[in-house]
Amino acid sequence: MRWVDYEDDIRDSQKTLASLKIKRSEMESRANQLRANGLDTNILDARAREKLFVSRPNELVIFLDHTP
Image 1 (tube, rainbow, N blue to C red):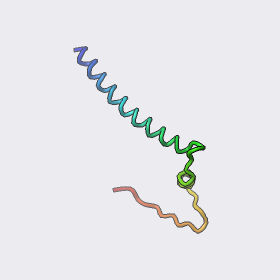
Image 2 (cartoon, rainbow, N blue to C red):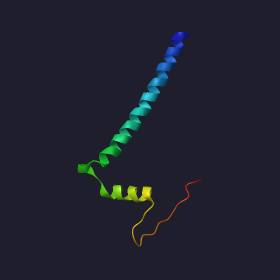
Image 3 (cartoon, rainbow, N blue to C red):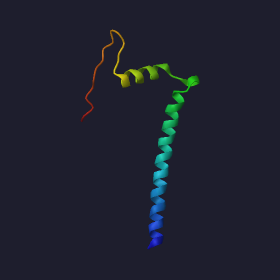
Image 4 (cartoon, rainbow, N blue to C red):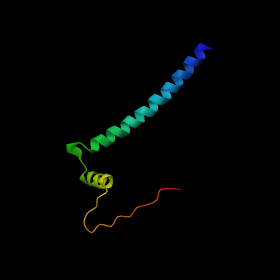
């Protein structure tokens, strides 16, 4: 009985590890975009304006409803 429980735990841990590796890869990719030598100023500008809820003069902002 205990051996089966261990095998289930190992399988669950392997799934969790695979998921975390994918998340880490995504986060590393996003972090690389913010490094000084690879900084994409367009992405930085868009994200900053999105997070701070600001826009440029004479810029039209359209809010979309993402609910199904």
